[in-house]
Image (cartoon, rainbow, N blue to C red; front, side):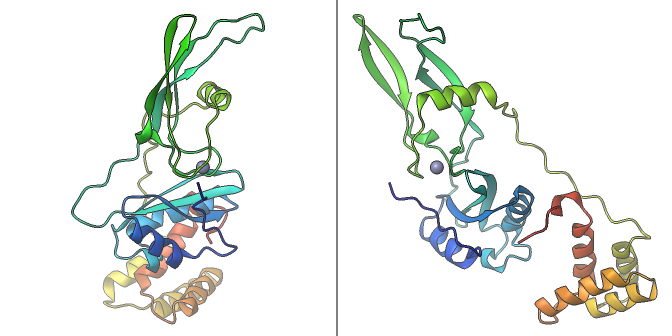
Length: 256
Ligand SMILES: [Zn+2]
């Protein structure tokens, strides 16, 4: 099967969303990032379309970041519409052939293992919904194992699946998303938010000036740089959010 990767040097989210809209409910690889922190940050922003205009309106897309042989892949899917889309589980249990680890072992065995639903090569969803029993004869008996097809086209080999089931400790439930704590009152973001409360429609430009006055020149410059990239469209509240997100661990490693 043809790889569905649309990786480019610069992520082309417009192309990714066009492809995803054409196949509602199917996951599409949108981008590949060298840093997992960047990929995770973007994956968090996609569903709420935060600074990601290609994914507007908020709620139209789902996203996750997963390990890829060349970095960390961002996978997205279009979910807007009335019909619910199938949930992508975190793991899958399958029966595989396992003839024992000892060199002298000659029997045929079948064991059930649990592995991730993400392809270890590209991070795309494994064919957890295509699992079918496969019967094969052995010594006058029938053995049954499972087979599945990955939409990404990568093949799972029995040995690798067994190894993964033994090595990778999968969390029982998805890791909870930490609730961001509000910025401290005396932090640059806190100063802006306090001022914005008393000044309706406060602009990011005014927020930058406020920070200059309080000796936070570096943060003021950061806001002005962002303001330029947004062609001047930025509120003080957005400036505060930007500084706060930059000081949070989730943004570590930068964002592309
Ligand atoms: Zn794959």
